Picture (cartoon, rainbow, N blue to C red):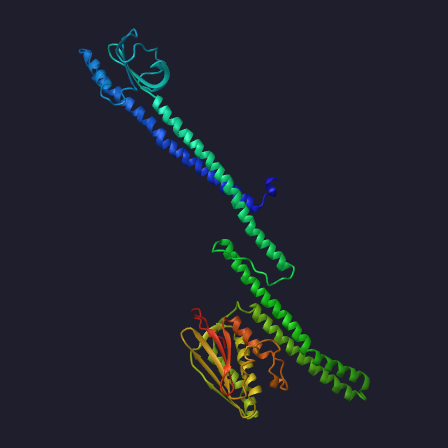
Length: 461
């Protein structure tokens, strides 16, 4: 398999394996330098120090002094079996020391070199330094490296064994890591294919709190939202097919009657006018559906400005005051200054308008409707209360669904979208629509989060 064909899991596993091997190599090198390297440098330092000490002890007028110094070094009990001391005359004859002869020097005096000599009936390597005195005699100081070589071999063997085991562990870990990674990715791919085939109820498994689990949680939340939207589209399609069949059939009948049975131009115009009225009602209906779709999709959620909810309530009460008076209902406002939040002024005005219109439409003649604006530290609230028949408790969870209508309201003009629009607008503003029994009547509360307007922002009017 070429590198271009490697999966991401394989490449990640291989990369981590190489990094681990590099880390093991660096650690081994540091360990080697910290042990064998330190010991070798210590031996060289000691060799130089011993040579300098003996060179300083040499006295031409008293040759026996250097002999005493060499004897003391050999008998001090410190590395005596590894030390080599040789004092040579000009001709290379051994004058003192623990060697009977020494070969010629192939390196400069004062510098260190490693040479092979025969010692104790076997060849060994020694580190050597030599110095020449003023009278021509030469001092050779050497250190047997046999034990240090044994330590080096032991360390290298241990590092080699460790490297083999590390390589095996890295290889096994790489295969395991790749298998686990491909398994998690495979689960995601398998479930996404099932979702692609139409099973929107499938969800990704969440195991623990790692990156894959957090990704699965986010994807599941997205799938939950998609399923809700798809169910909403299906419900809307079914509702449109159910609720629009009657007006479209009626509209077609009117046009057919106009085409076949109109006696004169006046009657034809009358039938066409009725048909146009029906078309206008359908346009209003589709505009409401579009407004719900925009709100639920958050299309208008990015341009929020500071709005005064109390001012909106005042405008809407003024707008419906004449209609309330015409049907013998009373419409009052209990406002509160400074009830501001961030939002879309037109959408919030539309929501308040829908709540008041809903109360006027279903509370009945001579009803009392109260609009109340309030706030606390966390929320702002606009409540519309009426003393009409209200909504039965069994229907309250469903009246915000599109085209849903309570049985006793089906004879009233409307299409069952008013509260759906309010709920969608509330959700767009991170708020909620609360419906409850006012005993008697209905209490509808539009609850929004209290948000501070940016400095210098002007309230929308």
